[in-house]
Image (cartoon, rainbow, N blue to C red):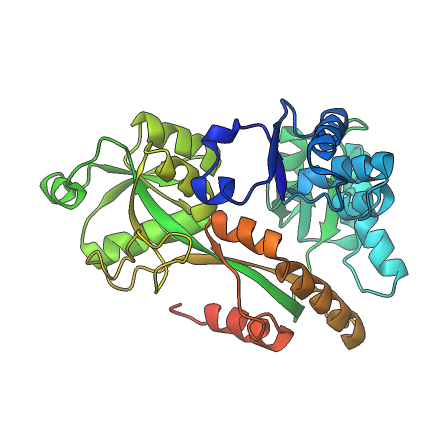
Length: 363
């Protein structure tokens, strides 16, 4: 396995470096030209490249363009764009018989108003090529729509994906990974527990998303300590301020925390899973650190709309399960701090049971 990154090789985690046959550094990972040059360079060193993979959604179209240019098998640019462009994705899925929410790619305020009048509220608005829930909003009424249009009005060069908000049963078809949240503190911290007890109410607790906010409230309830919630717009800025010592405490996914922990830039207090993680065996659980019951593990999965035929669900499940069985994929995910479910846990019925259990009151 060879790796193309923006990082120099000596900054890669040791667990990853020992498995690499080659490494090539580029400046812009979204530039197909730079990726292609790196692939050609690695090919001259190691032989023909048989597969080109990336985790980030934003990389799928550039990688597909490189595959097509260099004749490497895998997802082509048209398919990649169907995945990346959410409006196009729904068009393709609907044509294949998969039910989808009604949607519109709005390029003006008039488009947005027309769609809201035709579909009604609530609505979901987001970038057509977004990632996760970034810049995604729920609009419950005309006042919300007006406020959104005043803040980020859609335009031809900045279209917005608008969708009807649907509720109901989903067809879960695969559990992909479980990502334990890590409680991290600034690098100059020593006896943090003693400091918190001596300075009640003074700890700065980063609140960068809903999971962090819930964890903070649980922390207060379980320890009797009060914290000062500091809102952030994402884990990236929050991590930067934690490294610099601007804030005190951050709860974040292992994939975000591990590189900084390994580099000695921050300290890990606890992994908020019920058991220690195979990728983070030296980080104790909250139970072990004296805060029993402080659990906050995120998980990722795939869903299909209600009514999706079972044979399609089965095909999708098999495709994802086969991908997760690939040794190189498993190695990369574990190195990022995520736990890969067992084959039994990846079945649709098991994933649906996990989702139902996590949604129970008090969980």
